[in-house]
Length: 296
Image 1: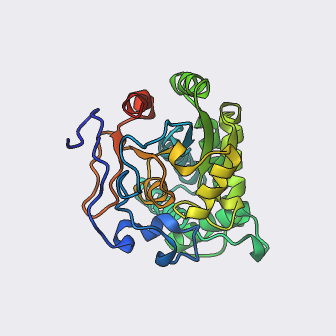
Image 2 (image 1 turned 60 degrees about the vertical axis):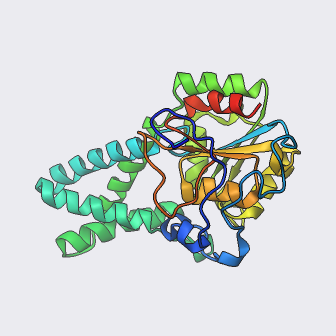
């Protein structure tokens, strides 16, 4: 059946496609050494993985993404940007158009960020630099390191303060943990993602937490999924992968040959043409129990 609002998508196979078409390079910023030959073709249904319906194993473990799967990072980020915009307006006497330009430049730099810990700068230093460059590029003139630092501190603290697990998601994780092993698998720079995990206090719900930035490769590479399976002492076909990113969560799940992939589509988003196709599509992680019923 085709995927619609709040309808589980039960189709398991995906159209034949070139892997590079299925991966959004911008989503792989942290995977700087990406080689298409390292990944598995996405058209990997239960049958193509060498298993018939009768042979499929019972689900033993669930791998969860963090950002925009369990916590509303995008919403928190938007509010943090708005607060920083107000700081710029009151400090520099700028109009809305100019402050929006500065903030848009910062978001662009953040999205395309490439961080190398060996370079001798912390992620905080790099992101203060994003604000300083954004202000200079918009206004010209001399450097404004003090204001850039204020902008970064406000943006970072505001975003972290707004991140939380809803009571409903806490209940979901508690209930799931009674039956399944749970692992949190999140891409991103190590310090940044650890700060999010600490801010939302979610570690208690999981048997293990794996931060992509703490390892040589991140999702969708097979190696980090193999690490997760080892930590949980399970096999790939014992697991399902749940996340909002087709390019990293769902592609990675297919690459690792997990039992099923579950895409959190948000407000009824459709799978784009040419993208990897998830086994199941739900608008919110709260609908995951319906998928698990189908997998029994």
